[in-house]
Length: 123
Image 1 (cartoon, rainbow, N blue to C red):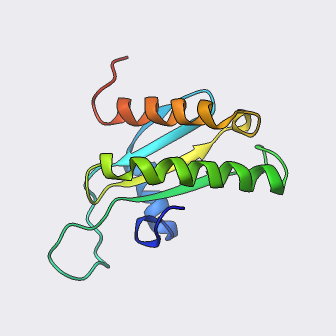
Image 2: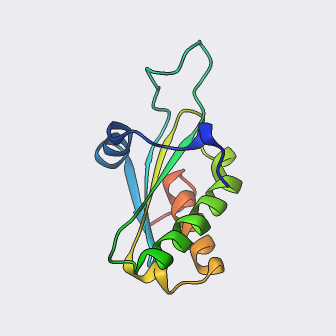
């Protein structure tokens, strides 16, 4: 499970990542990344942690399928949150094909999208 301090919860944060961040699309998901965004709500001088949020619409499937996809994405992001620069906002939007994808396919697509967004991929 993704720790609470790494979860994106506010509507404004989702909107900021989607509107002002960069995006990379894959067959099962789209990842939006806003690097190094500072959180005005965080106390102290230290850099805020990387936070991730997930959007899984009804187009993905019924409630059981959507929750399964969300759990898989949260689990995958937990292992990758340290790779993203501190203070970044990440939004992972599941596409309709993600409901039929297995865990390995979601992992490959998430890795490829994050690699591209952090400068490792070429187009």
